[in-house]
Length: 286
Image (cartoon, rainbow, N blue to C red; front, side, top):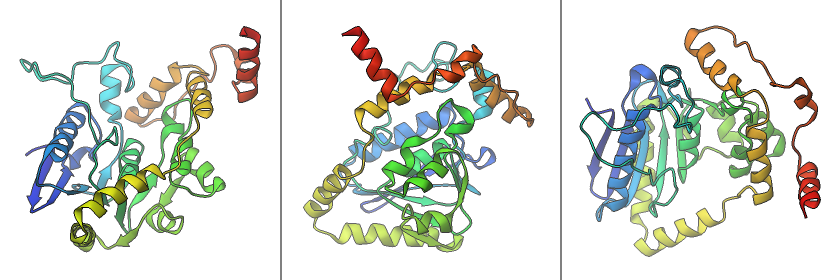
C-alpha cells in the first residue's frame, strides 16, 4: 500500500495521502512521496487539474510529532535529522513544487477530515477548497513554535480578529471556515470527491489559455506579508527558550501537559523585537 496514491482520469490527477493510522502526518517518507507525486503532476503533458485529498478521518494532521521526538529535532533543523533516502537509495532530496507554489496548474483540496498545522498549510496552498461538514481546522504554530501562524489569515484575506484567532491556534469548524470565505464549499463525506470532481470538470471545460492565465492572475493577487514584517517574524521565531520547541513535541507524544521554560533569560520577556526596535538598531548601525 503506497503512502501516497495517485490516479488519473483523463486530464484530472488525484493525489491522495494514505497513512490513515497516523492521520496522514507529514513524516519524512510522506514528504518524499508527496514531492514525487507533485513532480509527476507538474511534468505531465496530460494532467491539467489536481485534486488533493487524504484517506481516513484526517486530511492531514501536520507534522509527525512522534518522528520529531525520535529524531530529536524539529522540522527544518537538519543537524541531527536522518536522511530522507532509503538505505542504498542515492537519489537527491526532492523539492516539492506544490510547497513552492510553482505548479502552473489548478489544485483543488478535498478536505476529508482533520486539517491541522502543516496539514492546514498544504491545504492553504490549493486554489480551491471543498471540505466535509465535520472537518476540523487548526493553525497549530503557536502550540509548536515560538511564533503563531500570523500569515494564514492574511493570505486568506479574513478579518483581523479572525486572523488573530487563527494565529493563536484556536480550532475552527468547516462551517466557520466557509463563513469567513476560506472554504469554497462544504459537502457530506459520501459526496466529497463527487463535488471536487465536478469543480475539476468545470475547470477543464474552460479554454486552456483562460484556465492558465486566470490561475496566474489570481495567484498574483493573493495577499503577501510585507518584507519588513517577514524580517520581524524571523526575529520573533528565535525569541524565547528554544528548548520549548522539543518540549511541546515530547509532551504531545507522551500525552501530558508541557512544562515550558519561556525564556532562557527572564529579562528577555521585556526585550521582545518590534518594528521600532529593529529600526532603531538599523539607525544605530548606520
